[in-house]
Length: 170
Image 1 (cartoon, rainbow, N blue to C red):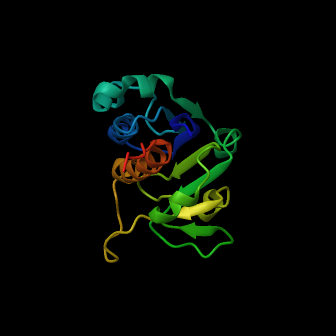
Image 2 (image 1 turned 180 degrees about the horizontal axis):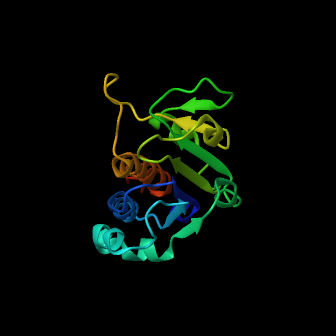
Image 3 (image 1 turned 120 degrees about the vertical axis):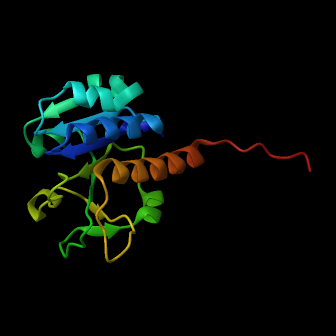
């Protein structure tokens, strides 16, 4: 199981600072792959690089696409994030359900733009939708905060599956 199979996909991100903060979040948990689809700011730019601090390598090796279809061509399982429950023919999972995902496959976590999230059409490309549990009266999370919550959870799952436990002598 490898963290190299995990991609974090930002669909139409609007703010340079959020792109840089997402790169930091990815590197915090030793992931490598950042994908951007049609970012609003010029990419890369000085604000993105400044906000990414020590994660400039993540920015520099990231991939940029014009369409969602292009970005997903090498992804086996797409998990779309959404603050709203969508009554679609897509299975809804929670953070705990991530333990059931086969992380030997290429996994992409899809995040929508800061202003509007993902549309139903964009979510239709996913295998699952994932909602981070928050205050029901205020579900708005910053893009980088959403990403870091998922990155931390996935990192814990992968690390727990690859850890070897030594049998005691007793």
